[in-house]
Image 1 (tube, rainbow, N blue to C red):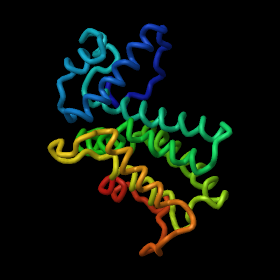
Image 2 (image 1 turned 90 degrees about the vertical axis):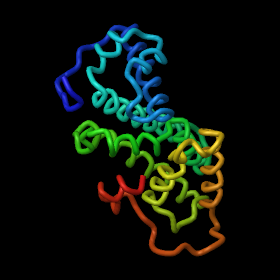
Image 3 (image 1 turned 180 degrees about the horizontal axis):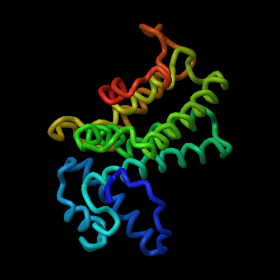
Image 4 (image 1 turned 90 degrees about the horizontal axis):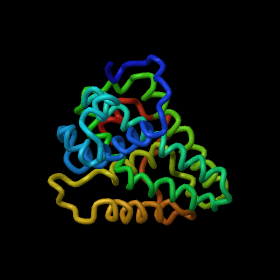
Length: 219
């Protein structure tokens, strides 16, 4: 079995589901904190499971990172869905969705993806990415239609900025981690409110304008 395995997965028992999610949470934390080469034994220790349990769910490092990416994309999509369905102010809903990406360290995970050998065009990963793009666009459209989001901002602008602002500084030079990422995201979000104070150079960038090569390099 590999990260590109697409056969139907057997239904897991409740305890197995909990163990799987603990491993994915621990792996997300470990990959962000220590990089993609963190020992899998360390991830198992962080998750509070045995090595055999980790390997039963994820037979190799590539498979684990692949499923961490799917897991984080699903979490982002579900949070955004709840914000859309709830009685939330449109701009505040967009802001909360963007701020929560600091908790997932989205930019750091994208860096690990580039060096991991994971197939970025795997159908499952492409589909999960498209769901993130689609629901983000809905949040943006609603905030723009409310008159609260400046009209010269596109979905691509926002997604690239989020990727950059949730990327860790080289060598851990920036203190504060997620708090600092949230701080800088909040500054950025405050600049998105209408009316615009300044004219932006160049046209707005939409998701449709983002080719895979550009997205990989920028985020």
